[in-house]
Amino acid sequence: MEDPFIVKRCNKIVIHGRRAGERPQPPAEATAWFRICDARTNGFIGDGYDDQLDAQRECQRLNAASSVSAAHRHRAEAGD
Image (cartoon, rainbow, N blue to C red):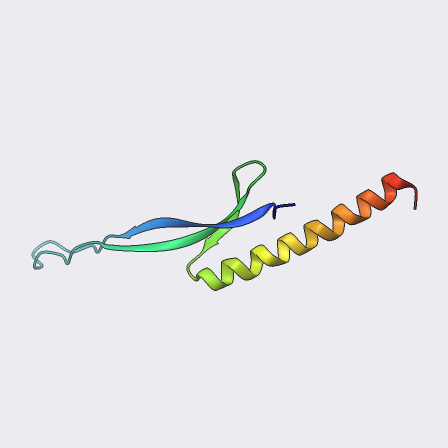
């Protein structure tokens, strides 16, 4: 069975502002951020993470909790 929650990389563009009269602004920075996606619905969970490791840790926690609750449901359906 595949994990229901996966980490997806999303593009983030950081645009630097400037005030009137200042020199031209530096170019925008292309960076990434990470979101947890529910593979069953393609919906996103939470606000997102700047650090990929933080997103992966939370994803693992959600997958572990999901597998425990699925096991409880299976036992309840079996009448254990």
